[in-house]
Image (cartoon, rainbow, N blue to C red; front, side):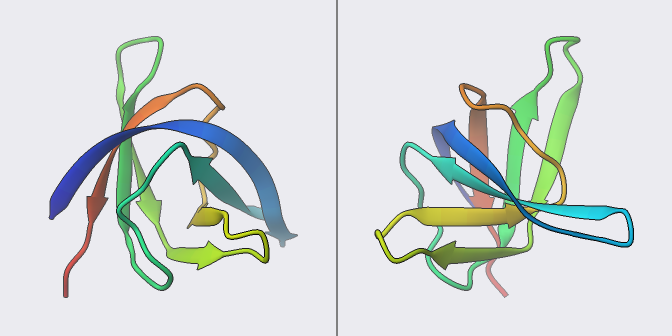
Length: 86
């Protein structure tokens, strides 16, 4: 996996089906491109390491790249992104 560091700039709910949420996270920059997967890693205020799988990557009509995840990360959170190469 290849890695990069970025900051979460925005988050929005994508869907809520049968109690399961999916979120879209925007970063200040990314190495992900449409259709790529991988993970975002962050450290919680408690010091716990968070690993958030990126299920998909999409680009909206404005050109903003969104990372589709099932765990939200707050705006301002520093993350390390890792692409999955299959």
